Length: 167
Image (cartoon, rainbow, N blue to C red; front, side):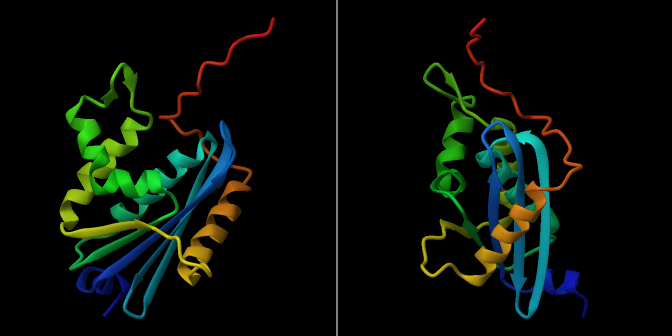
């Protein structure tokens, strides 16, 4: 039995982490666990934000899965966990708007909602356990390493906030 078959046959835990600067380079790490099997993925972008990186990690992890009997997602932030647990669905129903404001990262949230619907029911929560569980530490290490790669591509969906000019 290969790792691909195993990931499709057993419950899966998906751990994600992101490291970076606001409006700068950053990386993400993904750790997938299923039974005795482990898969680690990472990536990054030359200019992005930490929330976008965490969402990219989730998209990457979910795209890796083929079919899962049960899925548990451990996020780094309340933002990602709340989004997966219904907030993003509400934003989508409101046309990706909250009042007069556009929801940030709607491009990634739309991808996530399309991917996550294959895995109902699922659990998503923020890791608040101390000490930090090993899979979370591993995802954090992957993210930190990815953030320092010299060949990071652009994050095509990233739109920097308009900054006032001083001159």
